[in-house]
Length: 267
Image (cartoon, rainbow, N blue to C red; front, side):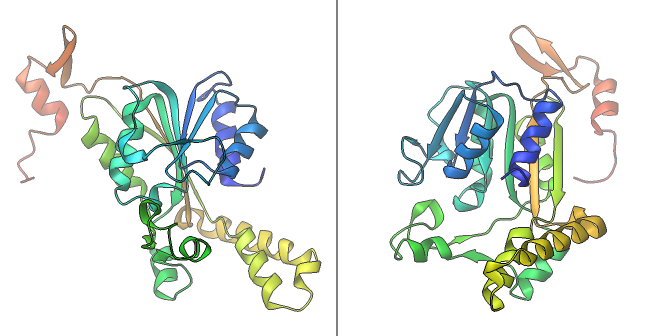
């Protein structure tokens, strides 16, 4: 678990004081992995939720696309490998942003040229059927229904555009890690394919070597993406405070100059 991107990225944020031990966390799409990681990191003030009640006993049943919480009611809202299971991933991320006071943190598959090639070669799936099969075809798919979900992969640029559209008055601050998280996948593949592989340590070592090599050569094109969207509350230079609200600055030339509105290129 300590080698996972989930644990390492949260631990990095804690080390850099981007998250605090006493912060309040809302975890959506929560499962046993989330509880184990939060316990290992010592985060005890966490509210675990999921659309599927069997995923983690004691979780509140909540649809991430429609969170029943007031604006900025939690310090951080976290989603690990869950956004691609919903039929409206952008809406779910927007809801997470609305409920967060300090930041949104999520972990998903990355959309890159390498991953598109992997999907074309049938090395990476476009749709996820394993959970449906384990549920006997009765659930486990998109929105926990019988239909397998599309594996929605993200780009960092897409995240930035979404945040700028959702909160155009404030400057976005986005922190991300991109890497190949394939060690466990390679280990399982070798253990199943070769006689005695499951009883030896070398499949794990080969998996680690493959993961380290891929990350050294082209980590930014990896299959995994970890993102923190920090709410800075820093106004864009063309926005100013107007009582309890916000408005466009009263200096038109400044607004055009700072916002890029002076450009003669068509939108």
